[in-house]
Image (tube, rainbow, N blue to C red; front, side, top):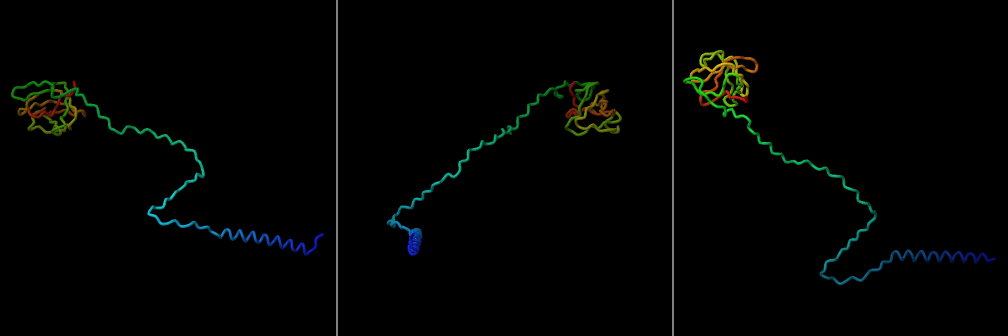
Length: 182
């Protein structure tokens, strides 16, 4: 068996060895090796950046982009005239009166130019009372006539609301009643 003094010396030796190793490790972490400083030059320093990939993510498919409708405005179709009221033939039904394009049984439209047409109680455009007004665009049925009042052609008409009266077709320069499609 070994003596207690030997054991004590062996333990101290182990502890001393450990202390030396620890001390050298401690000193090794504090020691810095400095590279020699290069001589100054006129070249700017070069910085190198290195990117390290830490995670690889597969690309996901992009969502489908909906096709947008065409935003241009289509040209409207060119209207094809089917009936021109001024193409209706004119005639002179009464001596010393203006020309006419209407006949009994025709449908006439109040012209969009010139305002409403007065519908009178009688055939005289000067004396007879206005009982209603036919608005521009209104359709009138020619029921009787014509008569001449102060050089203007006058017709008996029926309005769409059933009112019956007399109204002028025109004065020779302007026409307020235009024939509509037959």
